[in-house]
Length: 343
Image (cartoon, rainbow, N blue to C red):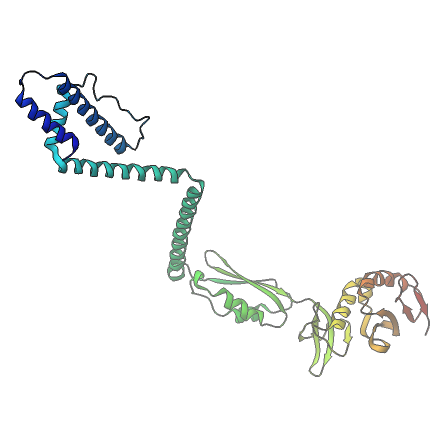
């Protein structure tokens, strides 16, 4: 039993001994004090339920003029409620406080920029997954039920027969265009001698496009199997046609990873076309560190050190005018001091 309840019981006992219709000043004071304490306790519980701290240590009465008998009625009500009623009220107040705190935490979290960024990232990720799923489903449907290939178009061929490219691509007619293995087609076409690069694309609704980039021949190489074409990268790739006219490389080794091969191809590419048409051979000079060009009409060009590729353009530039002069040996190893002699 609380002190308030005990005091109330004592006062009632004393009141029973006195006149039931009148209270002395001491009883009035004690009743007012009890009413004040009850009001303060209830006000504190209401503030706790609302999550609002008290501004000071005192509370205003619930209603103006709550004194005397009003306080006795409040005390009587509290006595009737008993411990179970007070416990239930405190539990409800605690639940209200928890809900209020949770709502406040949620509002604080929603105002945090980091929380907003995380939500945005999550939304974007979800949208991306959905789009990927829809795209995958759509592509699967096209691969099974989409329009079939009606035509295989070959672009970019000049020396390679179109039929060779079509045979390498395989018979794709009737296959759904979305289901064509474009990587496999490109790999097979790339194996054709003379093909430098291949791109395979779909042209909707029913055309497969095979775009071929052919190798550019720069020279010839005599081999036991006959003359072969050498492209601008130094790659030996196919038999040379009988009527082709290109300079012949006379080097110990011809390969894309050979420095002398790359330097020789660079020299031939740097020469003006009228001069290149006069070159019949390109070989190593004395000691293997220089190039020598064999021209028509039994003429020779002493090119100079082949590792000195920085001077290739300058030598090619002066060679054209120099060949207008009568002579048999043209020395352009030093572009600023060209010499011409008969033998």
